[in-house]
Image (cartoon, rainbow, N blue to C red):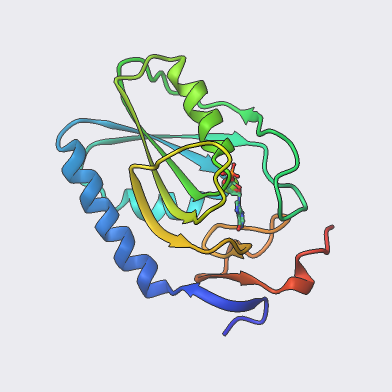
Length: 181
Ligand code: IMP
Ligand code: MG
């Protein structure tokens, strides 16, 4: 057990097995077509690194940085693009990778930005999706796990930049959800 967590929702083994299944689903979908993977950092860094190595289709990788929760556990303002990707996506098959689908605002913003480049297709792969929290209608093409509406950390997910290195996904202890700095 991890001292920062109240509860483990997804174990290391579950992450590993599901990631391989997702890699197979994605490779079956794209075949020999090249995929332009856009990873939403920092949250998706660890998932992207593991997922990419399970994909057999040819891949290009770039990252986009979107404003995050900051030092809070709920989104306060509309997401903004802080650092845009550099790859030219015109006519390309784009796969957006993120750690978690919550209100849907982040992915909608990223889809809007990418759509402007006229890609051939846009899909997304989310490690996690929270149930019953969508404020913007959005359906991801590939989803790792559906989880209840609790604030989770680990495997890339953070609170105020911390806990990304915990190898499982778990619910952050309530008393740790308030302290910033
Ligand atoms: P959305 O824009 O509300 O869908 O939120 C998506 C982003 O919020 C993700 O990329 C995460 O960075 C962050 N997020 C949402 N829920 C959690 C959580 O439970 N733990 C950590 N980060 C979260
Ligand atoms: Mg994030």
